[in-house]
Amino acid sequence: MSMTLSGGTVLLDARQLLERVALGPGMQVADLGCGATGHYIIPAARIVGASGMAYAVDIQKSALAGTAGRAKLAGVSNITYLWSDIERVGATSIPPASLDCAMLLNTLYLTTHPDRAIAEAARLTKPNGIVVIVEWKPDATAVGPAVHRRLTTDRIRVAAQSAQLVEESMFTAGAYHDGFLFRKG
Image (cartoon, rainbow, N blue to C red; front, side, top):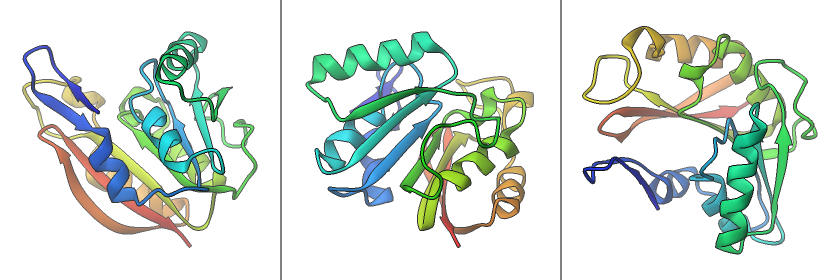
């Protein structure tokens, strides 16, 4: 499953990203800022299976409804939908330190306080768990938001370090995106 533009250009490939994160059966995963398509959380829920737990979190109820509809059409039933503001640390009703993987995918550029969203992801992730962040490359690209909305790699790294996350790797997540894998210490 890949997110593509109308001309066929692949923006982000969910399968490749989830392989990089090494999700497996029985794990707990959350897509923080999941959006309306279920692009990541539906395949993630399939991977973790009935013995795992998948959370779709968004501040927009319409986005959660869109993801729920797509999950139903896909026959995926192990997703819990949570309406929450990920920029309010402590607001998301996932048990603290319970996630094997928290995903912030193409989300931070939409936030006012990306450092708080990263802190919330870290709060929800168990020790030794993974926080994966994928964002638009900081420089102008053929598609994507205005440059002033994009986060620099330094800003992402500083916010992650402040949240007690340790960078494991930075990777190219597509022609227009960079990705980071952070581990919670």
